[in-house]
Length: 270
Image 1 (cartoon, rainbow, N blue to C red):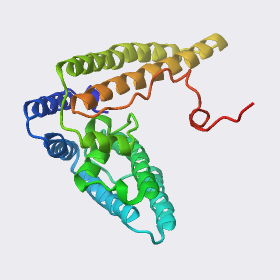
Image 2: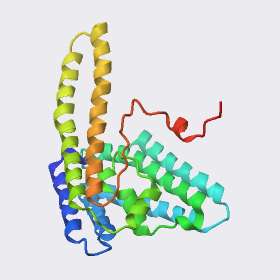
Image 3: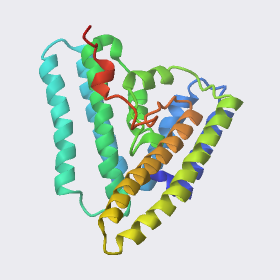
Image 4: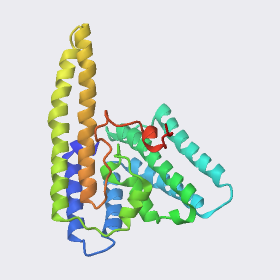
């Protein structure tokens, strides 16, 4: 959602530059990034930052509980997940109060759905790992509020993000070059290809549709969605890596990928 707003793009470029200039400070990636995440969201919407401060704090308390106690862990695990799913469902059904920013509804809806998945992954990790899963409030907040992937991913695994958080900022020239190229590619997809394809889609849709035109729109729409999400993922991955975090690939040959459960579950011998 941020990437078609030039002020937001400039802010993220500036943050990457600040991290590069302060690389001698070993905690720069953790502390400066949290300040950036909070400041960015606060400027976007005061209601959004207040909501996420409360939401992050409450879930961090639940996360620490699962890490540190053996009593009622399964009940707490299921209850915490149910409360998060219930909260996002209620907000989606009943909506939010009237808010001043025109993009708030989209950011709130998409961001909360995606962030609920991150919260659940953190609970899952805490439940099955226990005391060794502990993370500081600073790193947990960065995980939830990480601006480059805030609204729509790519999906960040809790354990991978925490592993990156422990490493000092060490983005070299080659990584900067690769990240910038990735961002430019994503911008080209979003601004040029998607805009052109959307224009074609709207023009065809305005006419009375025959069978061949309906089939064309169906295929065209899937291609449009592909480039839209692929472009977003390219930009998010590029900015995430400029800020010192390895954002996973989640849009690599999506139509050729095996189903998740087929890929991870052991196969029966023939």
